Image 1 (cartoon, rainbow, N blue to C red):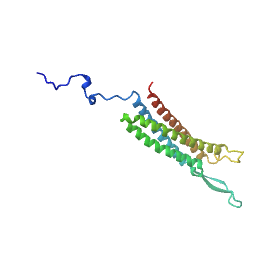
Image 2: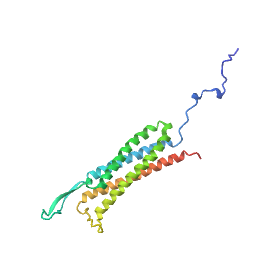
Image 3: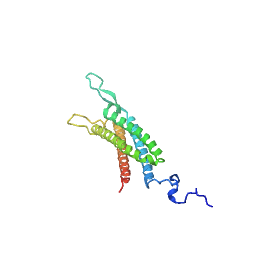
Image 4: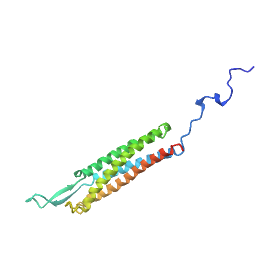
Amino acid sequence: MASTTEKPADPEYRSEAAAPPTPPPAGLLDYFQADVALRFLLFASSLVAIVVIVTSQQTELAPTQPLGGPPLVPKPAKFKYSPAYIYFVTAFSVAGLYSILTTLASISVMSRPDLKLKFLLHFIFWDTLILGIVASATGTAGAVAYSSLKGNDHFNWNEVCNVYDKFCRHLAGSLAVALFGSVVAVLLVWLSATSLHSRIPK
């Protein structure tokens, strides 16, 4: 006689724990791989921009201001003599540190599908903030560098790049890399927004 304690083989009696795990949405892993690559590029561009502008020191002979002094005295040109360049270095130092932390976070969240949406919400907010910082720093430093290159007759500002040519070349290189970093930050915001939009129920 068959035992009455046996459960029927109906699927509704199966344990929920035996159900296969739900696979992550298609394309989500690819997003985080691209996210890691872009954050590494942001770190690399921030580091290069800082190193180039910090090593832009140049000393040249320039006319002295006080009367009766020597006709020419050595005058150095350094990034720390301009508040705009100090802000530039500070902003990209913050961006470099931020990119390291978020790269590690993006790598760690690849194996945690349940946390991906939460991290995307945080990423899009902080990425936008970093974009504003690096873009404003690039624009500020670029404006001062342009004045150094062209001068301004209305304010009686003389061009200095004809004297400090090496210094200005370093500035130009640093600003070019910084502009690239700003574009990378734009792509990070766009990538996060696109991923969030793809999760909206159709």
